[in-house]
Image (tube, rainbow, N blue to C red; front, side, top):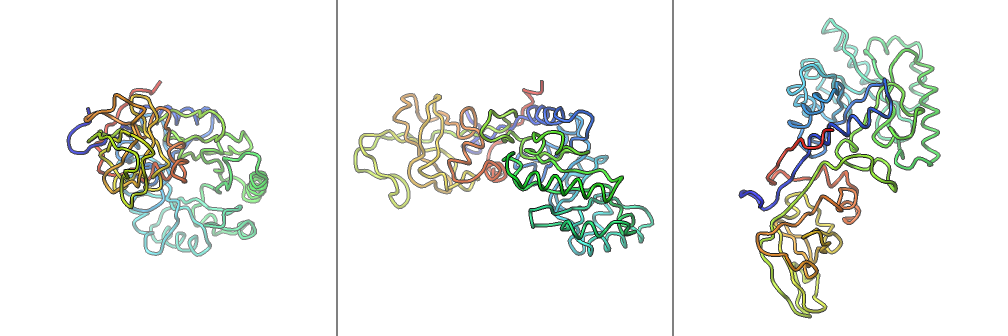
Amino acid sequence: MIEAGHGATLTIDLGAIAANWRRLADEAPGLTCAAVVKADAYGCGLTQVAPALWAAGCRTYFVAHLGEAVAARALLPHATIYVLNGLLPGIGPALIAHALRPVLGSRDEMIEWAALAAESGAPRPAALHIDTGMNRLGFCVSEALGLVDDPLVARAGIDLLMTHLVSAELPDEAINARQAADFVRLRAALPGIPASFANSSGVFLGARAHHDLLRPGYALFGGNPKPGTPNPMRPVVRLEATIVQVRTVVAGETAGYNAAWRADGRRRLATLSLGYADGYPRAASGRGMALVDGVRCPIVGLISMDLVILDVTGAPGAARGGTATLIGDALDIDTVGHAAGTIGYEILTGLGSRYVRHYVTGTEA
């Protein structure tokens, strides 16, 4: 039975997160395995996830924004924490105050960070972001090569070189090899600085992608870093909702807003207590599934703000007060994302704050 307070429960397995981190680290023995915990630890809750990863042995973390980094620092006073979105104007003093490391992506950022370090009277480490193909943030390859023998590299405290893979989940894509070659060339031009190349999927591209520091995120939270093959990661998230009401409709009757679904015969419908306000995507309307007594039951009609309708004709045990599983078992986050026309990343990071949340540590081994 789901607790009162909300009609849906989100169970997050911290033990599985720790096990996934160890599994990823095992792909490159002897190297550092960091953890990307941006977006509230991919929707799983930074407050709970960060200490669990620290207890597992993780010492280096990446977040997107200053606010996330400050929150992480409060939880992890001795961790190394990088801010991926760089040195936004005006945030430098706060980064220094909390011993945070920006990922610098332009010469202007390097100059500003070096000046702040000089004012503080102590070295202030930072990462250098090199764009090898994403065209979002970072120095392009030619600009990065222009930093060879530039004293600004030392003054800006560059202690890590990093780039971001464009198509790591597609190992045969030619761009992966081009990015790898460019990154090796840059490392040779800027020797002595540790480097990070591999995201979650990149971890499984082999030694050529490993360099000094692995930087997984999605895979920690149960996402499949090797699409099209069995998932090597343990599931982390389980979403279950209470059946509020069950009714029978006959041929021609409709369900939900805009009468988007019409019964083709006698059907049993069950209404669940959750909706898009909880982060369950409206785009899954008419496409997604839930499990009731292990039976796949299609979502019918349009998902509304607080309610989802299932066709439970094939699950005769469905009844008021029963439970439907929307994420879990055969419905992993990648499957749910695909059904909604999106990706598992969006499903995870969109998990709402209204659920009753349970944290368990049942699968650490």
